[in-house]
Image 1 (tube, rainbow, N blue to C red):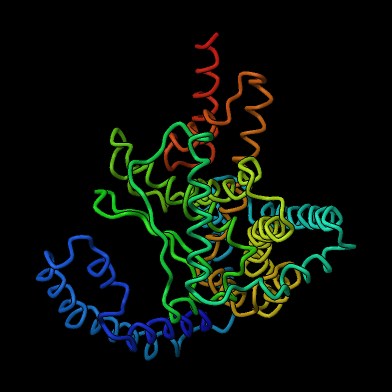
Image 2: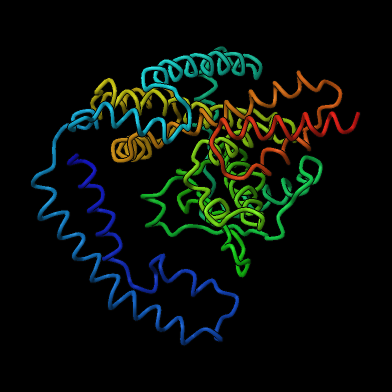
Length: 408
């Protein structure tokens, strides 16, 4: 689609306009704890960026703009390609690891949006507001919703992360050996990136993982901080992936291929957002709002992705649907919609994975009764590694029921 190519060209233009020393490729050299001891390697890396990577990206940019863009289609749906509907069904199966059809996923999305809308109404009344609109206005339009600057955002997230770390041993028996840090993106990166993202530690353990937060306070408002930190850092992505990388009994493709299992990895991180309730990190009106708003974001993705491709919604129709249900800025939503257009099906795994893990926990609580241990459940989920959802359910069930029988 033309809109995908135009955005891709703009991203590459951003690379080409920056000084080589400021680009992400050079970042590991600047962050390395070895400092001056790797100055020769860092210089060689910078030379490779200047002499090989940037010229290659220039050729890539020219190919997209000169060859692909003139032939791009104006329509958005992958179903407009030859055998597109069958291919979309393949992608939805790949990215959800379930037999659900695109039509089933669209229906689930609508149901989830209705469920969360009802939860929003109940939450608004619990906090003393007449409806969701008044509650949303109170939180989103609050003078202190956006902190003063990038440093203030980072410091607030650092403080929160340390408070979460203190609770981890009560909920997990297995904890990674590696640590993590928190850094601010550059303002330029923040414009085209989500509010936050995780950069897992290298498998060799030479550097810590990094939780990157936006340098634009309005893009990462305070009410997002609790669910974002739980999702991206510990016990979410950085902890989960670190644990998987430490499973040296697994073959390499399973230790280092976690990103290929979207519903397992993203579903766990989404589960961790709500786990904050058990851990005591919710209760304030803005934090409760942030948790539910973030889950609504993932539910809306089920509708938006299938709406674009299966139902052939327009870009504007999809943006309007998301604006109706979310507190994200229009710029962020436009970037989200363009992502769904460019990566059909990828956004579907988050909510489906999160729901699977929550349902699995409820089933284990019901089956094991007084023998159920939340700590053991979490160790069983993270100990399964990166797997499909059916394998995750089978592994956790066998682990917990086997342990329960052994205890008796």
